[in-house]
Length: 205
Image (cartoon, rainbow, N blue to C red):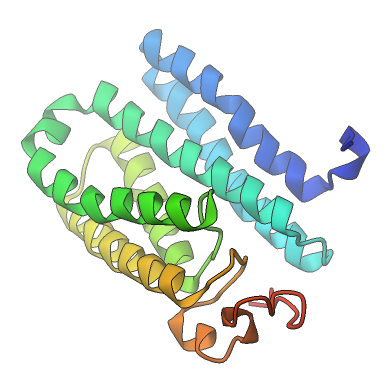
């Protein structure tokens, strides 16, 4: 049975993002836009910190990768809820574009759960770039208001990243963590079913 001491420092940063969800929801309900945005910024910052620590201290693990992905997804969802609550007019005006961009993401999640029984944790370069752009757009919009060129950039990169994730799901028979992208997946022995234990994970960046 796992105990608290089984988790490393990077895991605890992921736990922080997960634990902040009810706090962020409460701030939205109280209509505390500025406080919500600062707390959301703190959550986004921990994502960069735990990834850096995992690589620097060489403490990456499948469990940690899964926790990181859950924390990332929840933080992103909270950012979207914040936009809906505080920038409702902008969201309604661009609802069709947002729906088109999110359809592949929902499809990717469904495919991942059907194949692996859980969300992916590839953490590709494109996924990291998409997360940075998403976070930048959400935070900038909540602090200062929306910028359309950044909005469109977020949509395009998000769609490309989702297409790459779907492609990687079909390339890997078993759930794996930390795949830099399709180019690196083509050279990854873990793509062969049952070979997960034979090829070490490359977590360097």
